[in-house]
Structures are given as structure tokens and as C-alpha cells.
Length: 311
Image 1 (cartoon, helix red, strand yellow):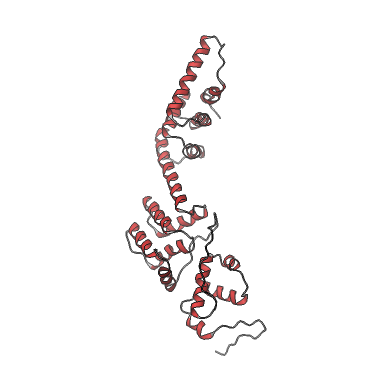
Image 2: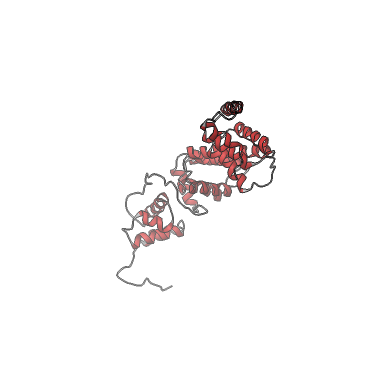
């Protein structure tokens, strides 16, 4: 072929032999980054990362590739030590890696081999190259550490989900929601497992069975076990009050009772029973005195109105 680059004052030159020798291991991202840098040597790392939606760590890996190939010169790129973003939108899948990049990543990241073995043991199989790419993406693209990844694998497997694609999407979802560290993931798993167990008990208590929850029920159950952190025993006692006063398993009425108890700071069944007893005694005393007794405002707010349906 007799094609030539059109000559102009802004021509880009590269070392031919070095470029040709690096073609086999270069993917589209590598070429895009290379020509972006060649076209504007002063372009900032942040700008390149924004253009191609990659992390700085990923950019340094690409730059290092061209440096080692002899196409670019300069000091070896090092992954910057920066704080992780609290929340960032990402692609639905991690980037793909070449065989050479996978080998280099495994060589340059101490502990990756142990992580690979741990994750394979969790799923009970050896990973394909594509599955190994996903694991690398979790560390390289999502910036998750090994302990986080092992915990995530165990969490997904515990739910009966052993697909690497499922685990990949779960990892991206959690990072996008700001669950970035081991402690944050552990706390999230604890909350969700507690909520699932609580929902199962509440379904039985209210006779809901396996049908889908309507929004009012779902919101109430999540509020009781999550926002209010109510022990099941207190919810069960509120259910007794509900049925006693309405002759039905009314979720809205039960929510009204629990709302008053939560506002009053009750965290144990003993506190609730004591308050109920005090209220009953005061109410009885008021009747004996033919209405001369004034009910204490505290119990009026916390208990008396609990026996009136909130609509």
C-alpha cells in the first residue's frame, strides 16, 4: 500500500519499531489513550479518565504498557494514593483485560493469587479467563480490596447466587450505592439479613403468607426493623394490642401503636408492659374519682392515643 500520513504542522510521530512490536497486546483503549496523550502531551490525567470513563489506576496501567513498549518515555507510572469516591456512577460491566494485562496484574498485585483461590473455593470451580477478568475488574476498576471481595462472594453464594456475572453486577450496584469498604459491606449485609428474617416472621404474624407485600406493608415492615430497629417481641406485643382493639391484624393500626412507643423511647417489652400497667392503673383511678383524675401527658401521647386507629 502506498498510503502516507498527510503532512501538516501538527503531525504526530511515534517510534515505528516500538509501535509495531506492541500491536498484538494493544486493545482499543490503549490506542485511544496513546493518541490522546500524543495529541496533547499536557492533557491532565483527570481529563483522560473522564473522557474514557476509567480510573486513574487503569490509566496508569495503560501508560505503563506504552512506556515498557518504548513508545512513550517518562518515569514509571504509579497508582496514586487517593481517597475513594463516596459514590460514583459506573458502567454495567467492568472493562475487559488482555491475557498480558491479566498476567501483569497477577504479578504486580500481591495477594491476588490467594484471592483467586479463595473465590474459586467459594464457587467450587476453576475460573475461566473471562471470569478472572471480572475478579481483576473488582480490584482494578472498582478499587475493592481482597477482604471485601471475599465477603461479597460469600454473601452471594449464601443467597444461592453462584454466577460470576451476578456477583459482578452486585459489586457494581453496591459501589454505586456507596458501599465501598469491608466494614460498610459487613454492616449492610447484617442489616439486610436481619430485615429478611424479620419480614419472614412478620408475614407469619400478620397471616400474609407468601403473597407480595403492598407498599403500605412493605414500608411499615422496613421502618420497624430498619429505621426504628424494633425487637420482634415489641412488634408482637403491638400486634396483640392491635387485635385486641380492632379484632383484625391491621398493619396501619399496629404501626400507629409502634410509632407512639418508638417516640417514647421504649426498646424492651418490659418497658412497654410497665407503661401499659401504669396507664391502666391511672385510667382506673380516674374512673373511681369520677373524672377528677387528669391523665399524665406523657402516657396520653405514648399510650392512650395508640388505641385509636390512624388513617
